[in-house]
Length: 133
Image 1 (cartoon, rainbow, N blue to C red):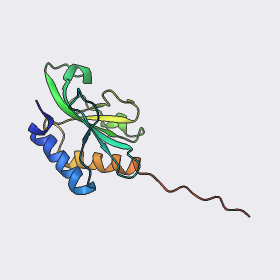
Image 2 (image 1 turned 45 degrees about the vertical axis):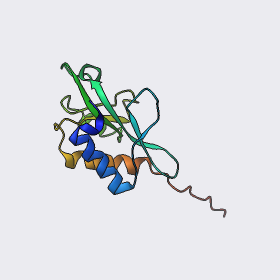
Image 3 (image 1 turned 90 degrees about the vertical axis):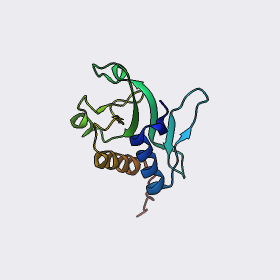
């Protein structure tokens, strides 16, 4: 299944484009996965990954699902994981990334909040200048 054939994935991609002017970018020739990166420094704040096996996410289900990985505050990440639609980040640092099943199990409002949080967490901050006294 192509990610953009998934109506929830298409809605997520549309939200990211409209909110941040970012289009997912395929980085690998043999994969439909697409990175979602800041314009300025190319730092990732998400990745859309189609066809991930439920079992690889830790779910006791057969078949595959499209997922969106987002960066997440490690303090709240454990409380978000529910084993139904939110999982530790697949193929990412599981202490800092969250996988969101794009199957309708997670409300769009929560997905949007997680995308916005990831965007802000990965936004390049200006360096503080050292004051001399």
